Every structure is written in C-alpha cells, then in structure tokens.
Length: 476
Image (cartoon, rainbow, N blue to C red):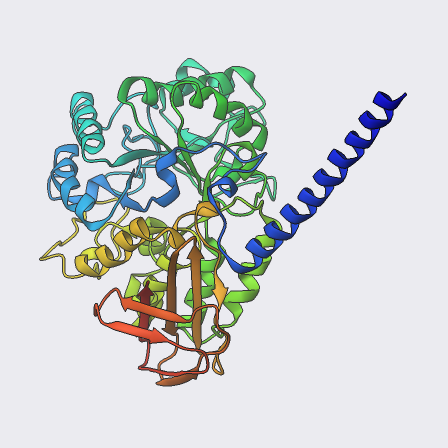
C-alpha cells in the first residue's frame, strides 16, 4: 500500500516535471523562432523531397554548348570549368546535348529540344567519351552537372517513333504536336511530337533513359523541360528510381504545380518573380509589390520550397530580350536582388561578359567573351552565398525580413539571418536618387560592403542615400 502510494506520488512528480519542462521548451522554442534564425534541425521536413547536401548553398550556371565557344564542343566547355568554379558556380546546367531531330527541324541546325535519341550525344558536340571526361573534370573541381531533359515530347525522327509508335499521343490515328494540358489542344511546336503518358511501357522507357545518364556518366540530376505538361504521378514514380542509383538534384521548368515539391523536384522556376522584377524595371510596378508576391508564394508552396531566381535564361534571352533590353539601366540592381532574395541564383552563359545580343536558337551564334568584364561582380555575389549561411537555399538559409523605410515603393531593403550570419541589402529600384530612413532594429550592426569592402554601421532610424539603381550588399 505504502509502496503503491509512493510509486503513484513519484509518477505524479515525474509527470509534473515533464509538463514543466515541455512548457519551458515550448517557450524557448517560441522565443528562438521570434529572435533568431533556424538551426540545422529545421533544414529537413517530413514530406520534403530528399536533396544532396551540396544543394544547400549551390548556385547554378546555364551552358548552351552550341554557342558557348566557336568550336561548340564538350572540350571547349570543359576548358572553361576552372573559370566557372572560381566565379562561384556550383551546378553546371547543360542545355540538351542529344542528337537533334532532322525531320521538321527549325532553322539550319534545329532546336536542341527536338531530341532524336535519349541515349546518345550530339556528334557535333563531341563523343560520349569526351562528355564523360567533362563530367569527371567537373566533379574533380567540386562542380555538379545536370542535364536538360525533354520528357514531354521528342523529335519526329526519334528512335522511338519507329520502334514504339504506340508510345505517342494520337489524334484521329495520327501523331500530334504536344498537347497543352490546360487547353487539351495541340500546340504549334511543329518540330516535336507528343508522348503518351497513359502508356506504362513508355513511362518505363523514360525512366530507363533517365537512369542511363546516371549509370553511364554519373551526372547529378536534371532540369526538366515543361515539367507541368507531364503528369505529376510520373514524377513521383520516377524520383525513387533515380535516387536508388544516386541522390539527384531536380529542377522543374514550371511554377504552377506546388505538388512538384512533394513528388520529385527540389527547385522550380521563379517565373512570377522574374515577371515582377521586369515590371518594376519598366515602372509598371512598385518595389513594395515584391512583398505581396513573396507572401503569395509562401502560401501556395510547401515550407521547404525554393526557386531558381534569374534575370536571364535561354528562353528569356532569345525570345524576350537581353539583360539590358529587359532591365535597362537597373540591370545590375536586379541581378543583385535575384542573387540575395530567397532562392538559387542563375547565371546565364555570357552574362559575365556583358552578353549584349539575343543568342540565335536554331543557328550558330557564338558568345563573344572578351575579358569577362562582369566576372568580379558575379563572383562577389556567388561566393557570398557560399560563405554566408543567411543566403543558403530553402530551409538551410534565413528568411527575408523587410527593413521598413519611408520609400518602400522605390527602395527594397531587407536582411536575412541564419545563426550568427547576417546579410543586409538595400536596392534603389528607381531611376531617381532616394534618401531613405531605416526603421526597426533587427538589422542593426556593423557590416562590410561586399563590393567596396568598406565598413558600414547600420542603426535604427538612420538615413541612407542611394543613387539611381544603386545597391548595397552588406555582410557581417
């Protein structure tokens, strides 16, 4: 009886102690979430797609092998890898390297996205052995290589057209150009033919083709073209079949399917932010509209999402304009913003040499490299991401915290913090000088400007004057 009473009393005390400890932990956790950046335990969440460890702080660079050099070869790309590494690049994304379909091709050379064989390299770029050497060299430098993959359609003379005609979508018994899933109608992409994802054999063939490049060449992942045209259940089927060979990094060229982050993909395209930044550059939107877009994205995507942030890519450059055409005199300011907001920054080949032309898509049109005039600019931004955890990707980095000013419609000011690392950014997104007053105190501290290397102290209620399109990127 006494032993039983003591046992009950002891149990009650243990329970009471546990409740007190739990409450204390909850209060501590709440206080930490309000006053400091997340810790390592916050970098993974149940439901998130696995990602290689190196993706946490990675940057990405797009290579158009055809236009990257006068030779247009793998060897020429390989020769530039040390330069890219020094500039702060981590992921080398190669536009499609496969043989190009000749039937219904566009222009003299055709589109790299009209693939004739998923398991071969374009002989104009080099041999399989030379591509393997490129990947090996990249890995030796600490770089990663992802391939551009075109899963929704092939060229009209792809090997599957003859071998597996039942793998293609047919309308009234005839193969068709890709069908837009949002309208159910064929597109005008006349150089490619639609694959049928209702065919399980075709799905298996696609999985095996994507596994091939992991097994034979040890690539590190894929950028998947028009990923939203492919059923999401295929992506969920694919991902474990790739990861069992090696854990890959997957980029979706799509933004309108939040469940991509649950089925397969580690990152998607920040199309809406790109569109917003262009509108601000042209005076059609004000700088404070960035906040409403960020809030909308945080509501529609899972907590662990992040996007590829860009001012240029092959589609934008060829179809819509160069950096200067899209962003005018504020081009550098918008590159700074896209490199310091949440997400992974993209550098499109040639930007480090002030690429000032729209690269042809179906013809030879070599990039003029000159002396890489903007290389130091990009190096400052990309290497800052490596050494300052506040800028790391997704949950590994710090959230953007707005620094309120009295000119939020013209100036975008914010800071990000992760543990003891902090970055503060102020960008004048207008063509007029702006003198702003900084409100709040979370950003207060002494920093170093990553471009001028000068020390700068930020204080609450201080004023800062920025020239037209001027930016300050400060690191503690």
